[in-house]
Image (cartoon, rainbow, N blue to C red; front, top):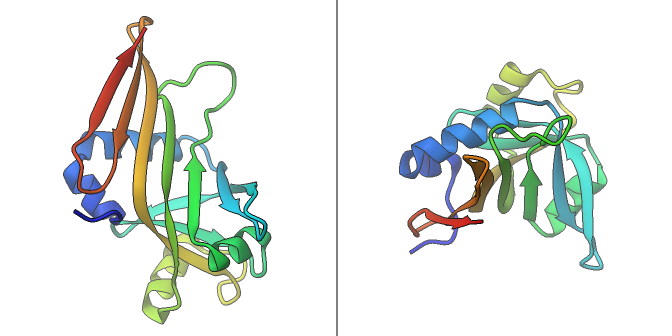
Length: 161
């Protein structure tokens, strides 16, 4: 059993959940990233994410606090923007994992070609290794459904009234 995996492996293991997660993140541009400060307390910041070439990518301005946090401690939690109002059509979606810095010129060039960041030479780029994917949704206006996936484990679904 492994405790981390990439987006492509997750998508292959749980294609339906992966599709819902990508749709939730694709519905809005900005999401919330939680990192760990030097003292261990959480820092939350806005971020744009991309699903490209079988990976989940996080791009950041050079020297940003969230990038410095991840370079020091790669653990993070990412929550999809729930959107306006109280409805969350596809549910509440969260991803936990480790951010892996990408220095490889070819991978960075492919990312730049797809995303066109403001400063193509001066930004931090991280590829995500997943440790958990969670979706909380409401079914038939009656049940709250919590789906939890972790690498090497089957998808777990719990219904609550």
